[in-house]
Amino acid sequence: MCPAHSLARRSALSHAAVAAAAYLLGHRAGALESQPPAEPDDDSVWREGEFEEHRAREAAAKAALLEHLRHRSYVRLAPSRVAGVGVVALVDIPAETDPFVPPNAHLCRAEQSIPLTSDELQSLPPPVLEHVLSFHDSTPGRVPVNACGTVTMDASW
Image (cartoon, rainbow, N blue to C red):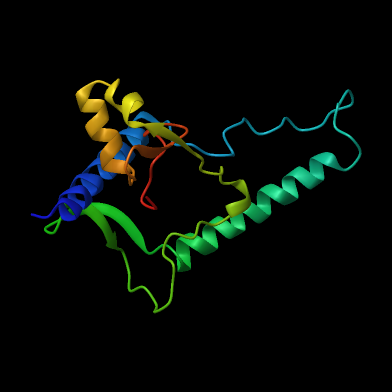
C-alpha cells in the first residue's frame, strides 16, 4: 500500500474513532452550549427587546437546522470496506454539492491550526504522534495541527 493510501486509511479510522468518542462523551463542540435565558420578569436585566431578539435568533437557527436535516444532510461516518471507517452517503448527493456545509455556519467555531516542528512532534508519546499524523497533512519539517487538538474533529475532516 502506498504511503498516501496508508495515511488516508489511518486518517479515516482516526476521524471516526475521535468523532464517535466525542459524541458518546457529550463533548461535541458547539456555539449553543449555554443554558437558555430565563423568561424576563419585573426585575429583568434584559434590555428592551433583547429577549425577543434572542428568541427570534433561536427560532431562525432552529428553522435552518431543521431545513438542513430534512433536505441537506448527506453524509455520516460509518464502516467502509475501502478504509475501515469513512464518510458515506445517507442519501443521493446532487452533483456539484458540498456535503459538508453546515447549517448556521455563523455559529460554527473557526478551525485554526498551529504548525508544529519535527522536534516538537517527536516530543509527543508515540501513540499520540501517530494519532496526530493520521489527522493532519504534513510538509517536510512541520505539521499544522488543529489548535483544539484531535477532540473536535468531525465528518468534515
